[in-house]
Length: 223
Image (cartoon, rainbow, N blue to C red):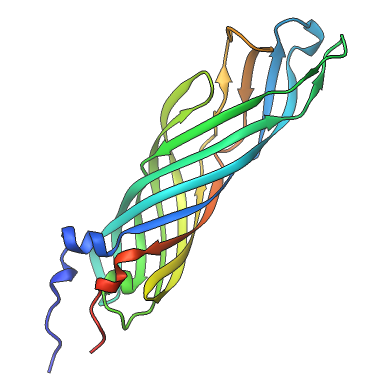
């Protein structure tokens, strides 16, 4: 006979928890930085390379199916929260007096990524017989970006892809690409430090991380 309908096919608190993803990864943000020195006219409007060092991202998300394509495939609304931490360190500049100038700029980005995804596999069916998972989506991420002296709020579109497999828990890899301009550093008339102004350019960048679905043990067993 036909299989009984599964309650977990309907979005609800239990299903959201069974689809919960927790992950950790690295963030990449290649940006040039334009600076102007407050004391030396010859160093006004210098452009230096900056590197995102000690970059890490922690993320948490889940999803609700919006429309079923099959038992194990659906269009879904995915939502969560992500925290990205890194330090911009720029190339050393030599002042006319021979002094070396270098600065570290800590960056924190907290965003709330919301996306429409195509998803397939056990995350959709909540059944352990579907041992692989795959998702691809596009969305927008409202974000708060803070450096050492200023904070900004905005939103940026992004692309996402992830794939994984069930082995007790689900283990997967996730890649994120933000499509907007970074604007990590855009500070004018700085009160202290070597620079009068600082302005970074270039993209927000992207991240790659590993993740688990810790409550996949609660999925249904194969018939």
